[in-house]
Image 1 (cartoon, rainbow, N blue to C red):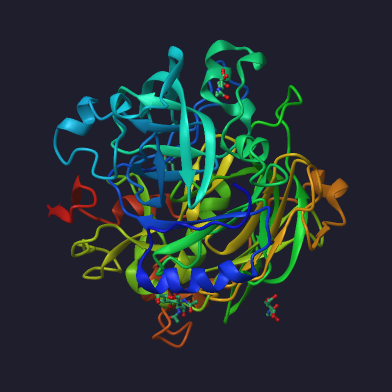
Image 2: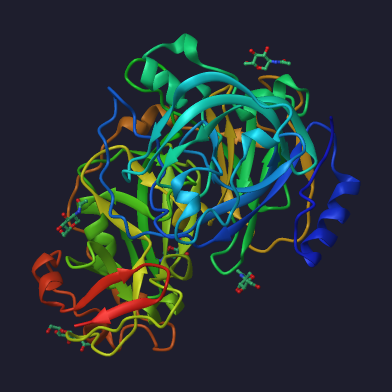
Length: 503
Ligand SMILES: *[C@@H]1O[C@H](CO)[C@@H](O)[C@H](O)[C@H]1NC(C)=O
Ligand SMILES: *[C@@H]1O[C@H](CO)[C@@H](O)[C@H](O)[C@H]1NC(C)=O
Ligand SMILES: *[C@@H]1O[C@H](CO)[C@@H](O)[C@H](O)[C@H]1NC(C)=O
Ligand SMILES: *[C@@H]1O[C@H](CO)[C@@H](O)[C@H](O)[C@H]1NC(C)=O
Ligand SMILES: *[C@@H]1O[C@H](CO)[C@@H](O)[C@H](O)[C@H]1NC(C)=O
């Protein structure tokens, strides 16, 4: 099937706006609406590479959330809701008989029963075996079957069947085919199969291996992935193309781009933050909820906003009132005059639980609600820009020319103007290339910034500066000592269920 398609399984109002879109959309694109959901233990689905060129990143297991879309597989179609993941490359679904689907909450987002599909064929017995960096995994057979996204049909998609898994829902990995689990496991490039974006091209649904991602506002429950095109009404300003970096062996495995500048901007001033790690290789990873930056940079960010590391939660936390802060961070990519993406504080302060939030029990923030901060620290590259960053950007992934285009998102845009990639290997439409990518290797000196923006990161209800010492209580040094005396005393009992035990 060729042409514009959209999911029929949407809420009423969304369906209406979609119908409006359907009339103007050109052929050669497939649009898929994705919904934000909170799920237990969905922290970091970046594929863990066996025998890897990348060190394994260890992340805390406390992050939550993700973007999900409903699709159908098999004949007759079985409905499953899968998490969209740019950090891995296999589509897989839990098998209905898997133990994870038959205990506790079960697989309430859907599972697949192969015995009920007339078109199911096993193509790799026991060959599907994927592990993510958070330690979760899924194993079973590779099979081929019909796969429907929106109204588009891929007739013969290779997928993994999670017979043995500890994840109660499947994923749609849309990364490079070379990053498929089987390639890592077999250490053989020739074991690669056409994954979803490639199969969509093979089936004539889209013209080139590319898609655009619009996650939208934290407060909005839904975003969009558009295969084969861009939507010029979903971003502000211009799209700028930047290069994706290959791994040391020259292959493109993941969406690594160069973060070359970070500024903290608030009513009280602007600071250029520094790091020993600039230029920082960051993976744009929609399967990861939070963002993870080098220790020195993360600590400067925490000082600016008044976030603190809780050793008990193993997480940087921040008073929830900072959601209304007028400050923001400006992320610069690909060298001087490259694209800048501004990320506001209301996108960076996340509720820890859907129930009533825990409170600070001592320290300068005593009595205030505790929230999770969207930028965490990590000790090893590649660093990750997950959903807390991606929501503020419109991101186009071009897997043929190995480029990404970025622009500032247009939150809650209801308009649409879809432009398809003209042909296989066409460059990203309406985008210009960042002008100084050769200068990416320049490394600015890592000096301590003045933190002149920090007082302006107080919550929006105060007039920026007056409660400087009270709200952040930050010492001049990068407050590690401060963090341990902060005194959040709680046990992270059941994430997502709202149960916290305050000690
Ligand atoms: C489906 O895909 C598999 C694996 O790529 C291939 O072996 C098989 O021939 C295909 N079947 C059809 C009907 O195209
Ligand atoms: C977008 O919509 C959500 C939900 O209606 C709303 O809470 C949020 O404030 C809106 N964001 C912007 C930037 O207007
Ligand atoms: C801070 O940056 C903003 C945005 O670039 C700019 O408008 C403003 O003039 C700057 N303020 C100072 C004090 O440099
Ligand atoms: C993050 O920073 C805290 C405080 O400095 C440290 O204890 C923790 O080990 C760091 N986490 C990682 C993953 O580097
Ligand atoms: C914050 O504390 C510093 C050092 O103790 C002090 O010099 C400054 O006046 C205080 N600022 C405010 C706004 O209270």
